[in-house]
Amino acid sequence: MNQNNNNKWHHFGKWIEPVLSMSLWLALDKTGIYKKLGFSFVSITKDLGGNYFFLKEELKEISQFIEDKIINDKSWFDRLFLVCDEAVERILLTENKDDLEEFLYASAECLNTSFAVEFADYGLERYLEKLSEKTGVSVGNVLAHIRPHKKTPLMEYQEELRNLKEKNIPRFIKKWEWVGTHMFMHESLTEKEVKKELADISKEEDQSAAKIDLPNEYKDIIEIGCKLTFYRSSLNEIFNKLSYGYRPIIKNLAERNDLSWDDILLFTYEEVIKLKNKKVIPKD
Image (cartoon, rainbow, N blue to C red; front, side, top):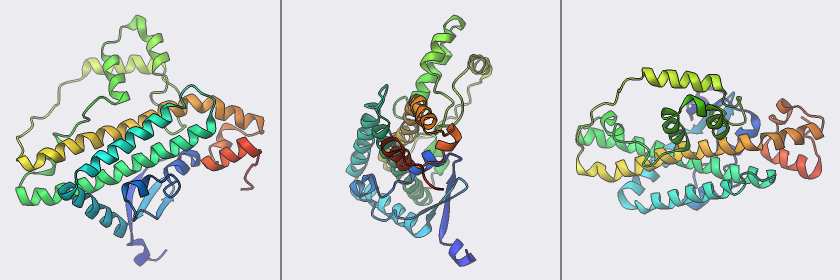
């Protein structure tokens, strides 16, 4: 790739994960989420060793799209949050069920919705940068006001952890065993980790910064930002919880086809479905 071609791409972030979960994130043209929200310009992404790239021109269009919605059509964000709720509802319907195919389709929808939230968040930050220049209020002071508008699963975990008695640790671990896992990776929660977290909590100091009052034009932006922050975290946390529950089913599918856990993590989600239904193993 020449230098001019390199300049077309923006490094959006780096997330190390297996092919199986990566393929769920990148099902951009298959879930219908983007068309539903009017994101007609998100068409190309590149993944190189966990690095995600998007065309700079498309990210510029996203920023303009979100700025227009903030100024002229704030109800668009209500539609986005409704799509988020629908994605959560669909994936939760697969919990504690042996329905791998439906779980994977629901996961693609959930993680693509999470990506839509990431795009909206990206556009909101670009708009805040412009507004900061106009009002003289630093972006950092605005971000200090943005917190999830309600508890995410991991926030509920932290709250319960703070009030945990040592005698209740085994029951606590059973309830929260998925915590610490991510995108089919990492092992379940252990007693050692819980005790370490409890010890760290006792050493914590209150580091909350004082918030300055903001001009009225920030009111709606703060409200939108708080909801984006909530969904950005909760969509991923809910997926991690359910994907942990589906690990035994995926492992069993691998073993029935003489594959290891590491082998099946190299499949795309569509290849896993084809393996389940037709016992077809990809040649590569």
